[in-house]
View 1 (cartoon, rainbow, N blue to C red):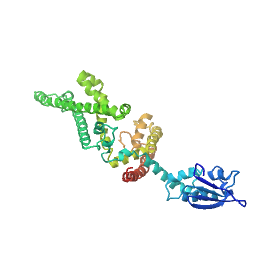
View 2 (view 1 turned 90 degrees about the horizontal axis):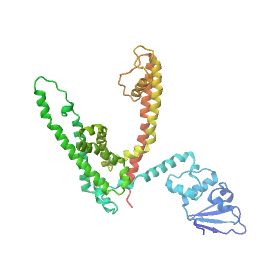
View 3 (view 1 turned 60 degrees about the vertical axis):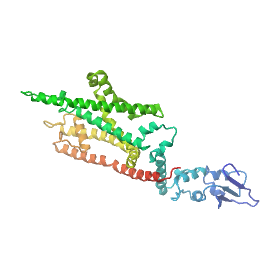
View 4 (view 1 turned 135 degrees about the vertical axis):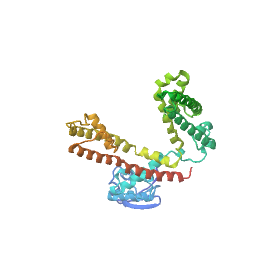
Length: 407
């Protein structure tokens, strides 16, 4: 027996072109000339030797070999739907047959099964765990699980709720600080008596209260960031994480305000946007929710279709913007004064927004508008079936993964 589990029995003196192939206890009889129809395959290489063989034994899957032998006989490879596509491809590789030779009638089912298996393997097993398995991992500090995995323990759940509360509270305080009725610096009151001044004085305590709220929230964010940075398993991965970078940048406005006064914070006012971006932590806290996981994998699988939409939108904007300009620019008091403004009209028409600030008045321009609006509707609905199909597929796959027993 060779290293690949093949027994070879010598041929008798009266051996003919026939050969017996024993696969997993099931014997198949065929002709050597039949096996030579696929020169690069394993059986063709074994037959094409000087040493004659009357019987070969392979410790492989017998049902798959019946389809392989049929491929030698008819030249058509079919896919048995009752077998796993991964196991089938491994068997094909052993026999030296490419799965790309599959017949068109079976290729769609084979590829769909293969894609489902590959997508199932890409799902991170760690996000499927809904128990407290993080405590059993000696390499993961408890303090990291406390701040990073809300489902690792009851304390981690409380920490996640507290973090979410401070995030929403910080964003609310930041929004109220820009409200003119609360911020006296943004109020322009003109009055003959002192009633307006008394009103401003009564409101002067509100900005101080909001500053105190901002201070408390910032102290919590600093504490949370430091604890996560100290206890993270990999410092490099922690620093390269986008949300951690957002958290760090969101602390800069508070730091410069309390250390350098209000002038520096005005120069870095754009960093206040990071406070609002911090609300994305809600998605991280909801990562263990089943529907959110399905949506995440759906968007990842639909990335190609989603990236095609902006490209098509840009192309259609240039085309219809140019067409609208040359059909309307000769009109007196036309809103289509140049191609950039015409492209603005094309964008709001393709996206079905339609502000009404620019609109065509000629017959030719209205025809272009009708065509532009029609293309815009098609442009929006084209990726919907792809996203819906991926959502249904990953919903089924995640349910399957979730129901599988952990090994």
